[in-house]
Image 1 (cartoon, one colour):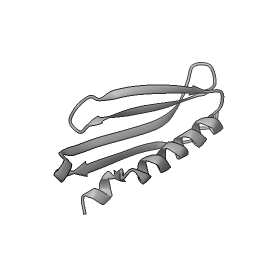
Image 2 (tube, rainbow, N blue to C red):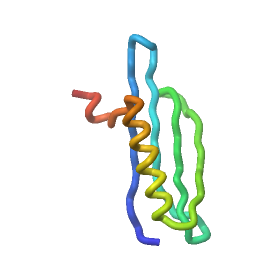
Image 3 (cartoon, rainbow, N blue to C red):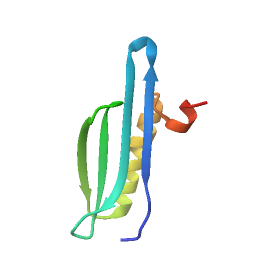
Amino acid sequence: MTQHWFRLYVQRIDATKNMARYYTMSIEPDLFGGASLVRRWGRIGTRGKERVDLFKDEHQAIQHFLFLARQKRARGYMPQSSLDL
């Protein structure tokens, strides 16, 4: 498995709806030569929830990572640095 670093941390904050959410993803190697997509999400300041999806190879994990990143962007999630402006 080649070593690609795929990590994402995005937030969605809307004070009018009392909404402060985060979503984070990373691709990590698993013990059997495949790749895992680790996702964590919840309200900012809480532990939230976690899900791990296993893939046969890194290419499939990257495709799913990019699909989910586009989906979160469409729902209004933004990188933390752009929220600080």
